[in-house]
Amino acid sequence: MAAQLPDWIIINGEFRDLYSNPLEQYWTRLNKRRPLFYPLSNCTRGYIATWEMMGNELYLVGIDGNYERRSVFLGKKLTRFTLKTLLSDRKGKPVKATWYYGKLRVPEGKMTMYEHHEYDSRFEKEVIMTISAGDMIKMVTLDYAQKTLTL
Image (cartoon, rainbow, N blue to C red; front, side, top):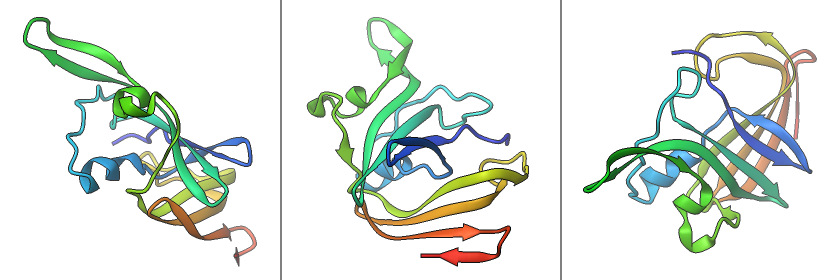
């Protein structure tokens, strides 16, 4: 599998790559049916989600992708998928990622090793955030060049 386009995360107003996909837990943890996203060679999940850390909380603020919409009358149709498609009752407003439990990986600095597989490339630094029900409970910075860990 090729290296993948990452999701994005906004931290202190700055857009950063996110080498984690918290939206995948939305479908599994909440027993929701995952849309039939149209996969691309560099984005096999078929969408890019945009997240934002607001204080110590993780919010889903956008989704951009295409999915296969099926209709009895029109058959299959490629349709744009957005946050409003996912959560129509929220009218496209940000939603706290209460379903997400895990680590978020945010690369920093120059790439030090390229891997042509998913998110396996390495960088000078990485910020790792541990999230529980949408709340950040821990954040560390790994500095591979200096071989340090900062809390």
